[in-house]
Length: 392
Image (tube, rainbow, N blue to C red):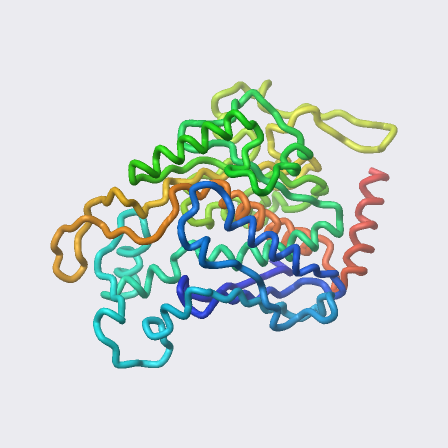
């Protein structure tokens, strides 16, 4: 995949999170306040834990931007962890003589986390080495990267928004549709980012009830991308299918256990005549269009010009005040899994991460098709393609 590649690094309680992004064309205007707003959105939502009160995420640019515009070279970002002051000795890169208490070793794996599987894979008897990196704190870096992808896509009138579809058993009706404008207009301080105020209230009450019980609850978010042109992705190879890459990206978000595109699971419950989107032609505007969008904007692995619609289903967060049974990796003795500071529900925040990952994938496919070392070159290539579509 050419263009817009990235890597993240950093531990949950380390000095900070680092991201390096390559392939962004030169001369893209960058408003860092918009990136910070994305990070703030990730930290919001009813049901978040105490860590959100500690961290006030903001990015620091180390390379790749000058006077508010990208240079075409790799962009390096840093998000500092404010909690680092409490962990400097425990996570020191240099060896230190520390008391056992200060080492904060973890030998008791928590069910539902990467603790045990990671310890077995990396041959460590200190689960701290696993849980620090496997923490969802890493997604802050991805949201920052997604902010750059959004800025790039916005230059081509592509917009992305999300909303909460369900929390636990409280969900929006399947037979109710919402416009992109409605989704985009969600008040970002809304507690659960749900489009229906009555259902949103029920969601909040459900989270309260679960929290009091010492449990956690999952749900589903939906991401919609508007303005995506037909032609991103390809049918010619399995690893060039847009829907396949989107599904992988959404599934890579911590706690996501299922992904749907378009009608998703419902596709297997309805007849073909009801499932597939009939094609019409608007001769006045020289374009093909569809009245329905059960395909979720992708057919044969290629975007078809309709809105891209993808859903992620989040499992309940596995760190519980109502502990599950586990076994100490050293003594092999059973115990009740330890509780660490955590969330009750992360579905609204996961939707923001879903936006970021969707933006990253769309930016990758967009640059694969249209290329360009500078934004101006990409614009020329894209406009030429639009003219081709207009003459089709």
